[in-house]
Length: 128
Image (cartoon, rainbow, N blue to C red; front, side, top):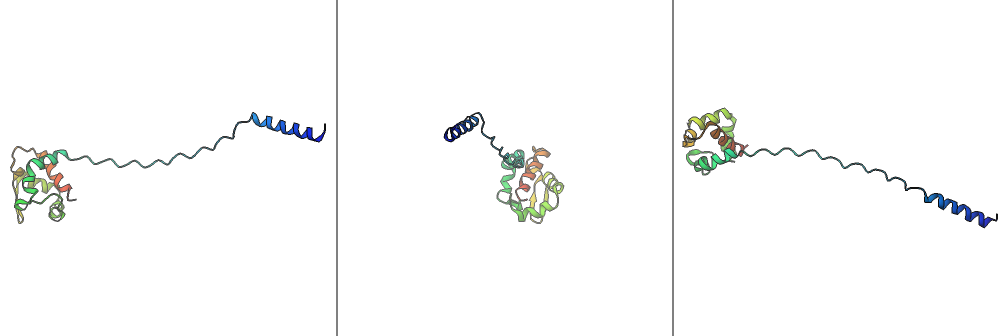
């Protein structure tokens, strides 16, 4: 066999051998990082919001008789500092203080204890 024929035969065998081979596997990509789950949304106090809108807003929205307005941190801060039990007691039983008065159950005797407490929570939470 002469050199050109030998070279052609060698190249042909190399190409034929390569035809049966599969491509090298692609390296697996790293999985995307998993984001931390978002914190669960805080449930809206729908009962407190409703009671506020129907009853409490008449005084608290405008600050009548010294009623602290929702979101007013300066007015609510000292009240919140007394604790929920005191806030609930004043809202349920009524209260007269240096800044004004709070009629029992917001002057609505049909409100349940839970409705009054929900309304107190709704207003106080806006000032926290």
